[in-house]
Image 1 (cartoon, one colour):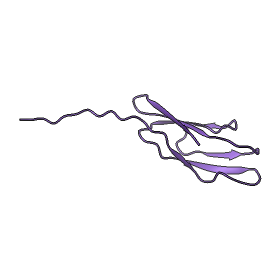
Image 2 (cartoon, rainbow, N blue to C red):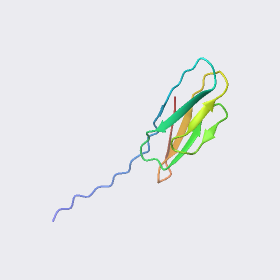
Image 3 (spheres, rainbow, N blue to C red):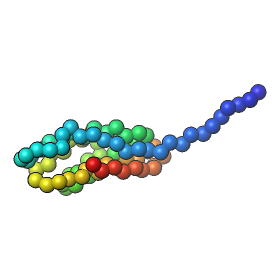
Image 4 (cartoon, helix red, strand yellow):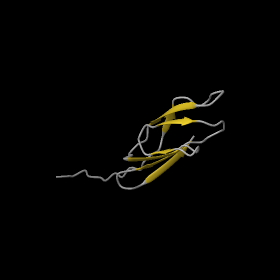
Length: 85
């Protein structure tokens, strides 16, 4: 009898989308939608002083400026991946 066995270990991949990204005057409320692969924990840094650990957070940007939100995800095995937009 032949057995076909293999082991596959996947790496996490951080991905997200934003509901909007431009306004002419603050405040700007943005919904962040996680679309990451193999994530069980989320760490958001909105670069305006705001942070979150929920999967799909909302952040309100109160001051004019240009921000690059950062998402770091952690997989079930403890591996991480980071993306900013």
